[in-house]
Amino acid sequence: MKRDIYRNLIDWKKSDNRKPLILQGARQVGKTYILKEFGKNEYKDMAYFNFEEDPALAEFFKGKISPEKIIEKLSIYREKSILPEKTLIIFDEVQISPETLTSLKYFQEEAGQYHIAAAGSLLGIRIGRYTPFPVGKVNFLNLYPLSFGEYLDGIGKSGLRGLLQTAMTPAPFELAFHNELLENLRLYYFIGGMPEAIAQYNQDKDLNKVRTIQNEILAAYLMDISKHATKTEAIKIASIWNSIPGQLAKENKKFKFSEISGNARARDYNESIQWLVHAGLIYKCFSIKTPKLPLSGYCEDNIFKLYLLDTGLLGAMLNLSQKTIVEENRLFSEYNGAFTENYVAQELLANDNKTLYYWVSDAIAEVDFIIPHNEEIFPLEVKAGTSKYKKSLTAFGEKYGSRILSMATLRNFKQDGKVCNYPLYAVSLFPKVHLK
Image (cartoon, rainbow, N blue to C red; front, top):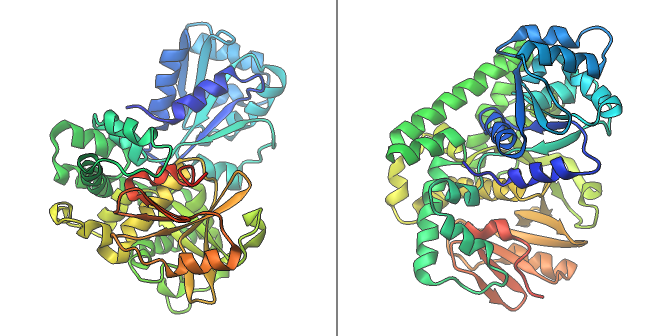
């Protein structure tokens, strides 16, 4: 299955400043698969070590860390030499061995000729909370569920994706293409971007089997929470996780601790939220009152929205019926547009936006996403249907004199003065398709 991150892996291999790579991402988003494909296609050899399947590997990294000695032992263990530059070394489920993570520092300092990529479930938690990690000694990449564009590639619709990628101006697509893209977007809302779910759909088009896979993934996430957190913390983490779909289904999608329990307070749950963020299971979107660069300097840390990593998993948690796929545009607006907003958050993150922000003004106007790009700030108002109503977007433009105002709706590309409408299936192009 083609993944866009492959280009980043090629760049990493060729970089003069290459360091050991840590590939982060939630469980079952395809980290192992893409690293193996990369190793198979781009190197003469691939040395794969899984610390969960073979716990004895961790012994090679204990005591005084010597990269050359480690390479020697690993070569003997696999009965094949590991060669500088020619062998891709993959450390999988590396969170099980903190010493292995620590060794990456020494590989960077003393043995940079070896190409090493590390991955693992909940690796973000291990690095973020338990394992000290020297800044500047590794490269990081994040792998997300398949974006809508990657999904099109995955189901054999690469022509449609190519059409999207060639859009350089807000010129509308021909109606036949527009309708076909909307039809595929409806399916994507239900199937989501988890590789196993897409592979199952490709196999027999059975959405019941897709939903079974989604429920199995959700169950695995809950097991991870109980396994990798203390009992008290696990209860809090699960409470937050289970509350998110219901909170997104409300008109006001700001995360409210009171929805967890009547006496819930931020100070008691902030660490649990960060656990989910580090695990790659949720995305945090911060409120800003003043859109100035850098946006991080003007965000309100205590006011935010939380989105799930995948719209398909959101549908499984809400037990969304597959009937909604064939009922025109009902799926887009179901649960107060929860799926649409969650989908847009996914697309923005998968397309190199590192952090999400939204704008609120005195509780009377709200713009769903605020994105910095080329030293400018671009607002994006998201609509689940074809509405042209843009009161909040207009208020933002009047207050801050924005050069471009953007909407994401079910309508085709359209430019109306300084307002640019992106069809939801093309939101990955935001804010690159706009007035010159």
